[in-house]
Structure formats: C-alpha cells, structure tokens
Image (cartoon, rainbow, N blue to C red; front, top):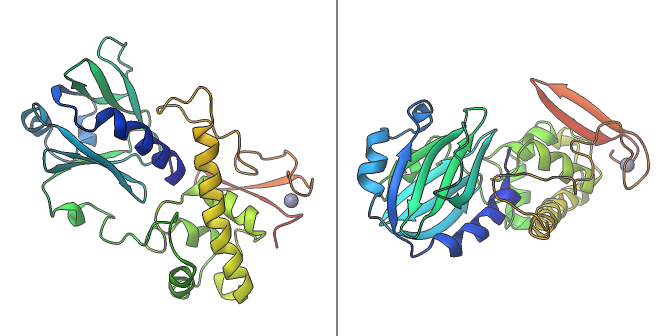
Length: 267
Ligand SMILES: [Zn+2]
C-alpha cells in the first residue's frame, strides 16, 4: 500500500515528465472501469487534447491538474502508477492508460481492485470521499499543531497515526516505523503519553517519512509501480531482530493487517 513517502517520490518523479505534455490517447479498462468514480466515457472525451499542468499530493491522494481540472487517484491497498511507453505490454491489472503525444504512457494498475480514481472540476475536490476530513500533511505538520490536534484523539497510538483526520499520509507500514523510531508501543493509549513523548512522536513522524523518501530516491532500480521497502526497521520484519536493540520483532495481526514492533525498546 503506497503511503506518503512512496507518493511523494512518485510526485517528484512524474512531475517533470508530465508537466506541459499533451494527451494524445486515453484507454479505460472495460473490466476495471468500476474503479473510475466518474463515468469512463468522460475520461476519453475530456482528457484527450488536454495538457498536464501540475502533479501534487495531499495525504495519500495524488492529483494531476489537467487543463484546469483534476484527475485524483487514491491508490488504497494495491494501486500503482506505471511510467512506460505505449508499446509496452499491458498488464492485466491496468485500469487506465494515458498516452502522451510523443508515445510515453502513464498507467494506473490495481491488483486488489480497491483504488479510486476521480475526474473533477475545480472546486469539487472536497466532494471526494475522505478529502474534506484530511488533517495537515504528516510530512510538514508543526509540533504545535501536532500537540493541539492529538488531544482530540484518546485511542491507541497506531490507530491515531493512521487516522487521516489527525494527520494525512501515514498508513499501516509507516505507523509501525514511526512508533519504533519514537520508542512507543502501538497499542498504548494516547492519554498515557507524557508531554516529552508527544514531542518524540512528532519528531519521529517527520524523521521516518523524510528518511524513507531519501531511501526510496536512492534505490538504483527505482520504478514507480514497484515497491521496495527493505529499508524499513520493523514493518514486514516479523521474527527478525530489532536493528536498535536486537530483541526479536513481534507481530500482531488484526483484520488481515500486520503490526510489527519491538518489545525490547518500545514502551
Ligand atoms: Zn528494539
């Protein structure tokens, strides 16, 4: 599941490749068109001839401004963007293809069929489910705002970090990484945090996300539609040793999602 760091790198990668380019062709998959929240015909009718103006991100939404309108992608669990050429073999999970005038192609793939794609007019972004509730971006939220907002949420820290209304951009994987960095247990209640622990949690949030962005950008074989998270400290590393204290990493699974943490150095 792409989260803030993957989408931020994607934005930086696609921006210079797309901005100013004109759309020659659009194809939407008849089988996967239910992922398009605007009628599929509209994409071909309105996007062809359009120009990519800007690629930007809000939380876990990626937004492409095209000739004054917004193409918005919420990749959810398995959505991926592929940057390729029109002649490349089309994967079965391809939801749409946008072909540029010189033959480069942007594709959206989704193997678990949960992603959401919207094509909206200016001013309609808040009508997208989840958009209006988004809190400040997890990458840039200030300590004062973080400390203010955290008071409204009494529950477990892992759920708190993943709550897009608190801060936007963190999901299952990076919440584990942030809590490990902060030395705090995922099931601990926010109400038990001391003021210095709130400061630590805020610092860990920024550090983990910034470091992840740098790690992804440093990957020699970076391809936007592939996800390499081998740099992570605990998430996805059940039964391995904690890189900080050497204790065996614990795993909890709930509703098909794994939480990883270290009982040795998270309290
Ligand atoms: Zn540890």
